Length: 525
Image 1 (tube, rainbow, N blue to C red):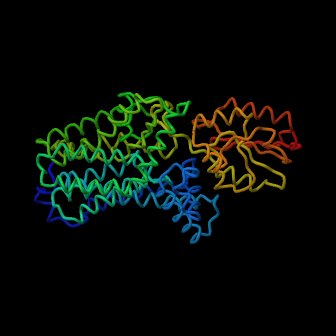
Image 2 (cartoon, one colour; image 1 turned 90 degrees about the vertical axis):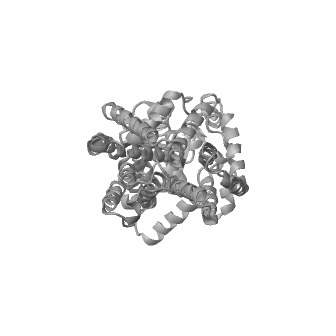
Image 3 (tube, rainbow, N blue to C red; image 1 turned 60 degrees about the horizontal axis):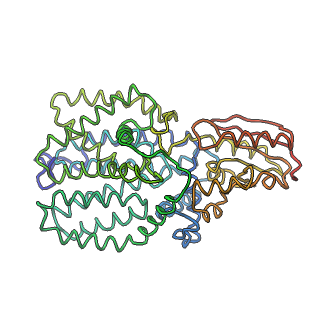
């Protein structure tokens, strides 16, 4: 890898958007626009919409009694959903409405494909590597997954790509506008996702590794980072406060990571959350081999290699070390989405080194990716929790809301035992609904599991004891989720059995990943 200071001579003579890139961008668009409405919005997407309502009271976006997330996701989602509501006559339970909501991250995902091409050309100085990197990004199931999710991830990748591009320009050119771009992009990143601290740290590690070549930029670098720290100080305070709270939780969310977890994450970069071992094993080995070749064959160590190696490896290694020894692990594969981008750039550089084996390698890589893409569009997740940390089925909340709208009558109430049902149903079905629990002990366990007690109350996520939950209702609809979902099945089964002692089951409906059962009850304890 070289840097923009020594690009390949053919770069300057090529058009701004060469035709192979046009074809790749069309492929990226096809993959990101296909199936936007296939699945219901899931918990995280519903949470984005819920937090977007805080735009009416903006101070809540910075109040830890109402949210533990940085504000940019709520702002962007709130503005976009408001625009969709204003220009589209679709009902919230319409599949088209879901597609329109997810259109924003999908469009950003298409833009990111172009930005990957530009950044690779900037770092590697090779047109062929840039085109290959854009292609690998276009077809990567991991990148596609989050380009179709109504969260901050697509915008996060956009800002990170711009931040790295600005960093490289600032170091090689020194113009103040590039230092300003570095500060602005990283500031916005920190207010989009607290994991951006790792990107900032990794960029500083990168600078240290090439300091012998960029001594003249030392004070510029120091000043830019000092100003950055001032601008992101409120977000840093919130991030460390959140970290301190989750470290006090008594019930772990995820297993502590090991070095095998890091390898699984690297596998996810190329295969997503597919359960097909016969496809993801060769993809993992091929991708890892190409990454190593792309970094080693470009000796000596320079800024381009440093960016790829450090931005891929430092967050992975650092998080495995940090959360591997912590009482509470917050290691999730999706946190390394941008590391996945840099890994693909390294792989593209590796493919470029293969000479006449380039095309066969890309063909094999693509053929192995196709079944993984099929698993993504089919909603098939890996059955082992370690391979899909923080990912669950996108069950048919939209269908449940549609069915309830058709049968709802005065005196009805919807109940569910899982908080994972709350945000989607708030969005799809803004009627009488409660999260039901067995007794007061459920509330204590929930606080020990999630913390942020004030937020749980403010968002009405707390489980309400069963007698209180059905009081005053004439008919109860119990929503039960199945499959790879965050629901403690014994609790749901116990609630269902108890409801049968309080009333009569009248009808039951099975949808994708859930069951909806109606009970005629007296509504009094």
